[in-house]
Image (cartoon, helix red, strand yellow):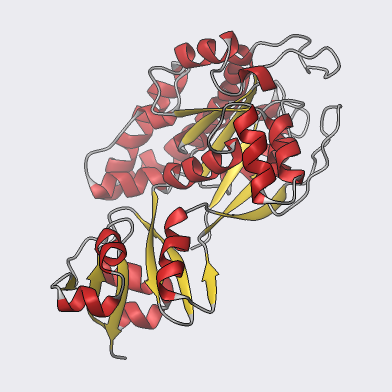
Length: 366
């Protein structure tokens, strides 16, 4: 399952620095606009302490964590929806992502230039929101002109789509994001999803602060919280410059010591990756055996056959049943055999909704 989070923001807000911290890729980070032109793509492991706990029980040949792709996209400026700066390229790149990590500069530093001359994260957020909304409005109006003709001809799906497009047009013209609308039926949700609107994507606002604000934030962060309080969005505070220094340390012990010195239990990168994973509505199930302990990614709400298909399409096609052990039971009893003997291994059918942390064994026949 390949899913991408796109790091977006104005030039010089810390996107590439953040990307370098959390990704296996290495983006150029420099003090001038449009340092990033082509999108940098890197895969990063999803931190999950449960993997090591299971490995300590099973002693596998290898441990395989879940991963998420992170894309560092070129900085956007006013007029991007009309092609200013690298606007067209930016908007095409963001359309290919599944969720947005919107980096906002929430620190003062006279040595780092700001494209608009001053630090104001709320203004910066509104600039990008406006450009994305204008592009979405262009998409909606173009699609509406085509679909209305089909609706007049009696096409039922076209009538549904016209209704959805009109709702989107209304909120976008009000300067609101498409994600502010929700739809009740699966059919409507699919029609809405297939429009691939930029402002319909889930978003997390990443407030890039200075070292002294890494733990509790600052007045810039409070302003962002107030500005997005009515949005269905997450906020994460991170000091990208400090995170880049932590990332350069070699040992886990050194990193933990550094974190303790600035009053943090986990690095901002760890928190960001875990939050991005949740933002994508992703969950983890495990397989555990002598060859490997592996984390597998599935969508929240998926049933057993769908999660079996994550391992191999044949598992889903020929699905018979799943044997499920809850993570807590596995850890408490210490083995699959003990779970089976104590009635903690459950046989589940096609309607079982897999839960985060389930340890799964699939039986299938093709």
